[in-house]
Structures are given as structure tokens and as C-alpha cells.
Length: 347
Image 1 (cartoon, rainbow, N blue to C red):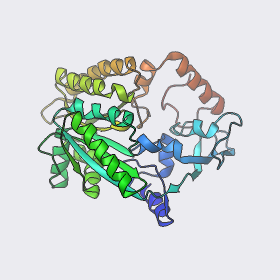
Image 2 (image 1 turned 90 degrees about the vertical axis):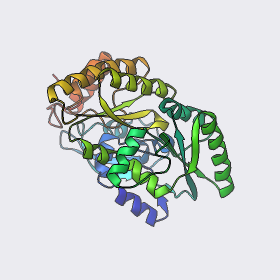
Image 3 (image 1 turned 90 degrees about the horizontal axis):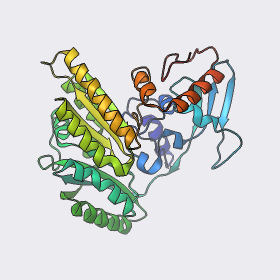
Image 4 (image 1 turned 30 degrees about the vertical axis):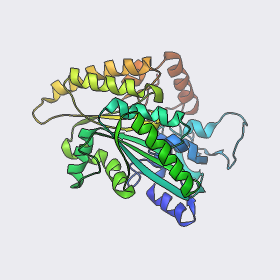
């Protein structure tokens, strides 16, 4: 994906898809899973970056879906059905992506908060304040320290609390200055101890090193990818922290806070037995997912279901909704040959 972004930039254009794994993930996989990432708050997920796809369907036909158009309502939106279907409805062989003009002006602000809930609660205030950020990312302090150890470096404000990283684009330097002042006022008013101009390369290296830093701490990790409406995010974070304490779980938390997507990593400690850790993780999931669905959320914001979350998908998804999904799978893949057993079972 980073190669695609670089090729677009070389032509003076901009590909907005930006998963944190951009240096290792592939654009075909991005489309098959509808990958999200840092810029989703402004530009949307991968499906919003795609005009059209070529697909080999389960009966062996090569089909062109979508078109290079700004709008069209000519029947069902089949390309969007295949995008994010995790390889269960077709094999994607060609993709026509949307490119945008390169942003001329941008800056990164780092707001540091003592309170996790205050940090993540600032996101909705930024958006309601008329600021349209490109990225809004959250990292809790223990995760920041983990990243520092992994990278062997020190990060701005890491001794003072939890991060809210805000990237914003502007039409001019004056426009950026106005937005920076407005963001400073909102963040400070919501409890930020420091609001700093971040070192772009260093702060984004730190954010994107989250997964690797966690892996360096423990090879056995439960990676939750929960999502909720942005205005419910502070309540969800408070519940995550409450449940972690209740079940004595070691967590590392980062969030695409601008779109309500929280990455909760639960680490198994060396001294813990796997059976005991797994039992507590599953008990945590049950309480956490009930809370999320009661607050309008879902169990996956961007990582998808695969086979690992299949049983949880069945347990927490509305049965009528699941029935419609199964009907589509049966109609398009009558022999159940594409990724059978993924997302849900087909009888």
C-alpha cells in the first residue's frame, strides 16, 4: 500500500487509504477487508477510495463491477458488496482507485491529557467545533511507554499523560494557524496539560509502531477491534478500563479516535497459565460486547471477522441481518468454495 501511495505522490496525487500496516499490507488485501486506518475520519475507509473492481466470481466468470464515476444508481452497488467481504464472494484481480490532489498545507498537534476519558472525550468537541481533522489518534500512557522501549527513543510529553494526535490540513498557512489556535483552545478547555506542535515523522512512527511494540512484549495477545459512535467513545473507554481491572488484564490501548475505533490489546503475561488467561479474556469479551452493542457499536471496526471472531459474530449480530448475509453468500457462491467457514457458517 505504501508503494501505491508513493507512486501516486510521484504524479502529484494522493491516495487517501492509510492503514497503519501500509509498509507491509497489500492493496488487494485492503480492498478485500475494507481496511481502515488513520485517515478514515476525513477520507473514509478503503471502500471510499475505490471506483471499480474486476472480480473472478465463484462460478468462474470475470466480472467488472463499479465504474470511474462520482455517482451512479444503476441497480445494486455490487462492488461495495464485494469490498470487505473477506474473500467470500469473489477474488479481486484489478482495482481502480480514487486519487486526490496532494494537500498543500498540513500540521500535527499533540495534546497530552492526564485523564484518558478527557483525551478521548475531546474528539467529539473538535468535530463539533467545525474542525475536520485528517487524523485523530489516541494512545494511552502505558502504550506510549511500550513504544518508547521498542523504538529506543523518548517521545514528546510521554511523562505527562495520554496522547491525542491530531493532523489537520489547510488551504494556507493562515488557515492552519487558525485551526491550530481553535484546536489548542478546545483541547486545553477539555483538560490537556500540553498542546504541542508534533514532530511529524517521529510521532507517526510511534503511532504506527503500536502493534510491533505489543508483539515485543508478548507473543500471545488478544487483539480487540471494537467500534462505537464517536460520542459514545469516552463511555466505552471507561468500560474497557473497568473490565480490565475487574478481570486483572494487562492492556495496551490505541485508537483511531476520530471514527470511534478502539484497538484493545490484551497481553498474556509469562507467569500466567494460558487456560486462566483465556478464560478471563472470554469473560471480558462477553461483558464488553454487550456494552458495545447496547451503545450502538460493533465488535469489529476494521480488522474483520475471519474464523476467529465467527462465533462472536453469530452471537451478537441480529439474526435477520445474519440471515440476509447467508442468503447472499448462498446465491453468489452456491458451492461454498470461496473462504468457506469464514465470517459465518452456511448450512
